[in-house]
Image (cartoon, rainbow, N blue to C red; front, side, top):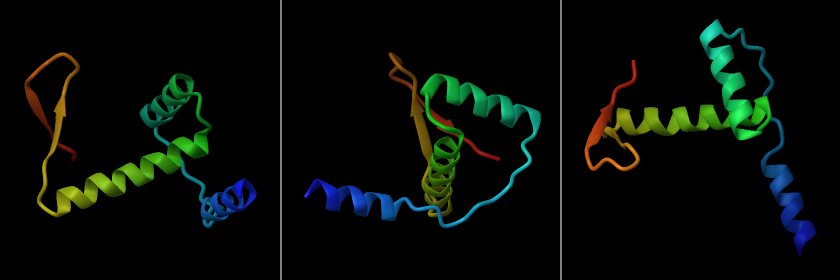
Length: 82
């Protein structure tokens, strides 16, 4: 059963598109810091970032707000993306 599950997972995560992206300095530094902190590979971070952006953008397009509660603080902050 594990082999089937692993095979399905690999098929689901198969590469379907390759792109080349030029990053501005800040984005390149942010990507490297995220890699150092998380231990993830560059492709994993970029894949997660695109999926997160799609989720956030979709929620904002639906009229929702993105709120953040800082650790230990009871106050909510609205996250604005430009």
